Length: 245
Image (cartoon, rainbow, N blue to C red; front, side, top):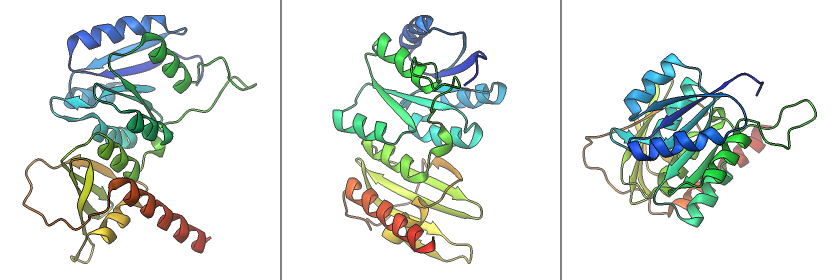
């Protein structure tokens, strides 16, 4: 990015963690503007007031999941980069999330040097900038429904996400970190469920996502573990793209 002051939005509900990160950021080599929020609702207010360059998001927030919020942020401010912080990571989950190329995952307790170096890389402040003074930045503009599904599975969640895309809407049901069911409402009023519904929702390139709190019971229509399911859907999408090319 340019030499303009970067705006960092920290979404964290624990005051001691907020205080720690605020102090840690004082080690950054360039000017920045730190904005804080203790909930997703407050984060929406802050994003309406500021153009955000970087989000630092806790997974567990009082009014929802920080991972789910990232998809909304991708629609609201796709130019932003993101860091997820969590108290319950695993080596495998961290590696898979970093492979997405969109977000970075840091575990609590947070290491100051790791946090600052990650921020510098995401904002293009690293020492390895290209000759024109810029370098690659992974932003939320690349966050797809399949990315959100992977992040949700990595968190071990049991929840329901509703995706909307133009006039279509669909739900993906998670049980203990695996996709258990998917339901897609088509424009002609009919429905599609199971693997085919999940594959179609995963292929959407834009839209919105929200978490469903009170939902009716649903059948388990998908038994494949989430890693195999995501890989299969991604490979199928690549094959269809190759045939259309």
